Length: 376
Image (cartoon, rainbow, N blue to C red):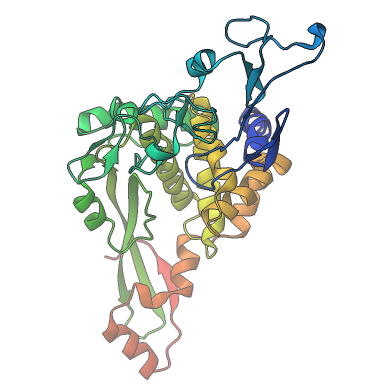
């Protein structure tokens, strides 16, 4: 567990400065550096073109052609360019090709795509609808359900169940090897349309950006003894399987599947948490760590600025706990703040009893003891 915590800590602390407001010093003006709190991080810089009369020893060198900038230079994000031609080799709009950081286009946006690459866009192209997965405006098209997807995300997008199966298996394998999660073989899996995804998720607390869902239900049978002193309870597990939203890029599907498998782990080990922030925060922390191991640290660092009171605050709570107290103490905390299935049923009998039995118990002022096991 130490390796997980150290790697997650190293990645997040190394990148957290990307999310803090700062300024970029130009020779004539100070550029504004802003961050948008979303799944994609956008930076806006205002560079300046300057002419220099400084001594030869202080004349800067172009970061592209490595020539001395004798006739002035352009500074963009702490990089120096001798001309707009050199500037265009590093900063051009990925959609329309316009050179960025010039007097004609001083501000622009940066988006980190699913391949962990920085992609730049001019303000005009940023006005267009972006990819629902990463925000990129690069060669966008519509999915069957009209959602927008960029060409980069589309390269690994999942449309068939057989394409999602290796991702599920890799997620199970990583969770087992790194955190000791038991592997449940033959989990029912299906890649479904957006309409079917939301239909099957009816009754769950589904977030708008959910890409996978795994449900484990427990169905109960009860029988009240003739004397009303004992209530027999039998619980049967019902696994409805994993569903994945079609069109999801492989890396995001992996991240979401890990999150859902962690829910399953918590359900079987602890069953119920009154505070959803604890459960969701732990699932987000494990998913973040696994995405780092999977080569997609941006999917972890984007959680730092998530302002959601359950997912964002929960991630920061549980990540800090894992970092500061370790795995064993975190497991102890989870146990202390959860209810086992039996305790939950004891405290919520109305959820497993039919209305006639509830009425009979109330009418006769019965206080039956619970006995779990097979009802014969």
